[in-house]
Image (cartoon, rainbow, N blue to C red; front, side):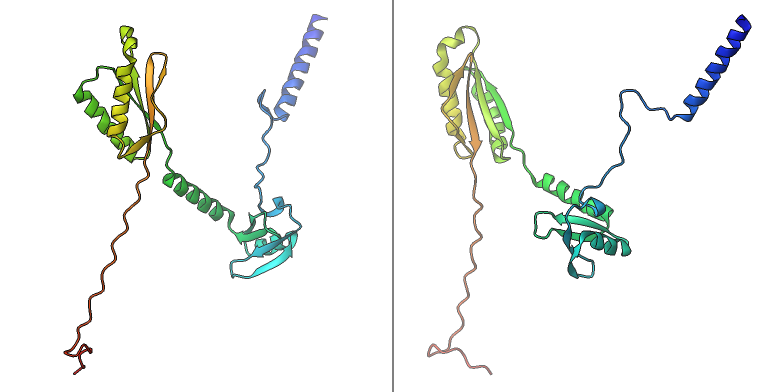
Amino acid sequence: MPRLANLILSGHDSLVCRLRALVPMIPRGFPPRRPRIRENVNEAIRAREVRAVFPDGTVEVLPTPQAIRKAQDLGLDLILIAPTAEPPVAKAMDYGQWQYENKKKQHEAKRKQHIIQVKELKFRPNTDDHDYDFKKNHAIRFLTEGNRVKAVVQFRGREIAHTDLGRKLLLRFATDLSQYGSMESQPRLEGRNAHVLISPVKVEKPHAPKEKEKPKPQGENGAPPASA
């Protein structure tokens, strides 16, 4: 009997192994991947009809399936470029080329975009002139780059009894930077720190002076000279 039981168990194990080999293994905790659907491209366009633009410059208002077939006959995709128009505008072009151009435009826009940052400079109530000038030059650079500057005076120990020194220092700092930035508000005291925020001043670029027209040469009686 034990031998028969072992044979049955071994046969059952081999059958389970075969079944596992036939079923594809799916990692636990991860749902099966769905095929990627390209939005607003070909069959994913939900509009009934579109204003289709083709590479030869022709523009036609067609039912969407017909416009898709016409684009595919040219070896292209139909891409919805203006979904809010009436009817929506779609263009027949290569999807890979369209993706490349879109990424290029986004990269160019991101490169031109300037993110304003807050640059913090820390002082003490008894900051010496050398350290003050050093930090002031940094603040000028930050403001000319279009960033905001936060000047902070830190009080330690008994220095908190002389907050007026910190206020005077911040007002002096803002006055020295008045050509490059302006205070958003008066200096504030929060705990053991006094601070002031300075925003950059928009500097208008001077217009190039117009060239004055040269006076035309005149004859003796004020008339233009006769041509030879």
